[in-house]
Length: 215
Image (cartoon, rainbow, N blue to C red; front, side, top):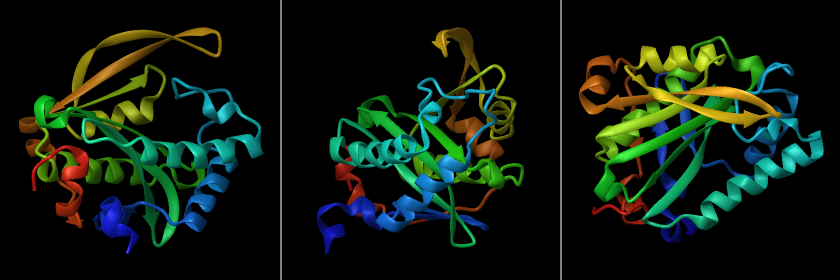
């Protein structure tokens, strides 16, 4: 089986409402279609790289290529991958997890997007909680970091709810304009105090060497 050679295909996270795992080709196509429908209001840009500004066909193709590129470039010392998020069996967004030299740094970073018609239902909080459980309980991380622009109130609210604390600011040029990013940091003690979403992890043990960790 392909999962014998690439065990991330067997990794699965489940919460009361969601399932997170690598998508099949048809599910990846559905996610590309969902992204074309819209991830944020046209007047806003929550991403450092404004990938949602691309024309529809280019946006969809770029999302597929980016997903494949991440998996193809994965190395034990430097990795990042997107898990598809399913609600009631329907793909609703993607949750990213990444790290460099995790066995040494014990730090992970994350990102995500959610189709607009699935926003405002608490899914963003639940999918990030699933990712944090994988990072802390599954991979032994000591801290998780994230960042959001100052006008991305939804993302910053999720961070606060899950126990992240402000960790400084950074300045970026996006759409030829200055934007201020707010860094967020979550330590293991703060994660333990704020964890309220039950999460089940399946298929992690075979993935550990691929992610630079011992079984």
